[in-house]
Image (cartoon, rainbow, N blue to C red):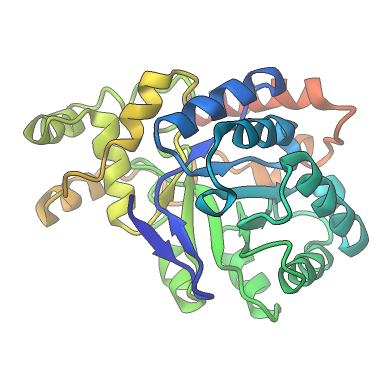
Length: 298
């Protein structure tokens, strides 16, 4: 495994396992499988409603807590200093841990500054080892980071070979913020990346698949990737990317594949996302999530 060092010294694995749209019932099994094949970074969120599954899985795994890197996110309905603080404690309870390694603001909505104050306090109190944001595009990120005491250590964004997020990189670098990629393989149901001919041709040289090349391209850019699969064999394949290195020419070839510099679908401007309340809108949230995935690849 390779690691990114955050500006506070915390080391973060460059590859992890994401549980977006993994049902609460299935989550424990999936995370158990992921841990068994070597994943140590697990990315969840309050909105996913599966933090308890993550907690159950790691507790039963035999993996030491200090060897794990747990990530969760504060949802919009918990925005604001008081509500966010309570939600952080509830996430810790569900995850069965005294601290999380990385806590993010999930979306750039609501009282994000109040939420950030609660996160800063959790950081100072030892409940969180690192704090950051998610889905904050360039302008919003710069405005937010400019007015906070502790600068975001991570910004989690949709990032893959077709949505490369190159424009925001200089801004993240200015604040020493690392990028983390959701949909590193393009999202559920997308065969565009895993069947890409250029990636497959490059992969043939190393005995790797197109998906493995796509993930390696991200990690060589210094980006943390969190692919998701419910199949143990695919999980093992996705993490098996650190025994080869793409050449500068191969990195440049893949960089030419960029189609959308920011994201294929900007959920931060959709009222239907903003207005979801958990847990009463859980079924609605899953249906919305599936539609968003489909829209990303229309």
